[in-house]
Length: 283
Image 1 (tube, helix red, strand yellow):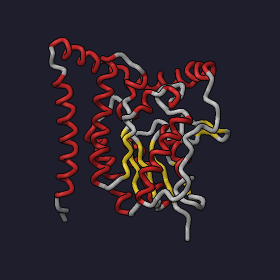
Image 2 (cartoon, rainbow, N blue to C red):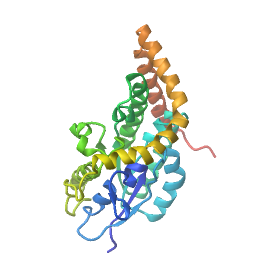
Image 3 (tube, helix red, strand yellow):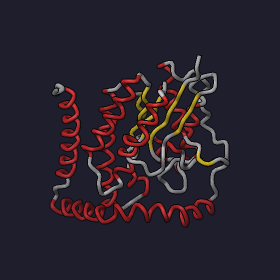
Image 4 (cartoon, helix red, strand yellow):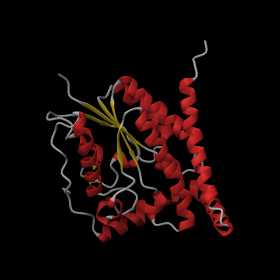
């Protein structure tokens, strides 16, 4: 009997950023892998920092399908919201294709909704609200598709853990070791009733001491600065336009229109997927 195969797809969250070991990043997926079975699990992490839904579809999906996983996680979308090319219709279509491919193979699918980056970074309201609106749109799509494909879905966009500073790394966007362990524990709890978590639950307690304040400041002054610069080059011009639009609507008392517009876009994206499902193949 072969080992359970677990393949993880996504971005820096699944790559393990924020949970360093001597060999590099570890992360929640690696922690979860040890609890999927009593015997050793065949674990492959395909997640790459900075990945968007397009990267998961075009690069990670083919490699994952070739491995024929028993359990597969797809946690992605935050980087899409941080780009000027954000398009909820495209995000929905890509995720639908990815989820459907694994469902067709019979893999157990793990998904999660995520907190919005603006709130985690503590951005001013006019800058944070457009990002929050985008992340809510992605989360709504992930919720709907997770239900469609019977995924084990983790509501990671809510809960007291978001406000617990000890859960987060220096950059305030990625969990620290304690946060990664919390994600692994919660996924393990979801999988147990399905019979796909027969090994010991991951420990919620950190193995390594939390980074010191000086280490956190050093990260922010080096790698953190580079991360912000790369994102700002792409996002900042559009984010400033979105913030200006936000402030105009607030001044006019018409902010609700922005929420309605975003909700309508999500509904249209999901409706388009449903319509494509019903459309017969044309020879």
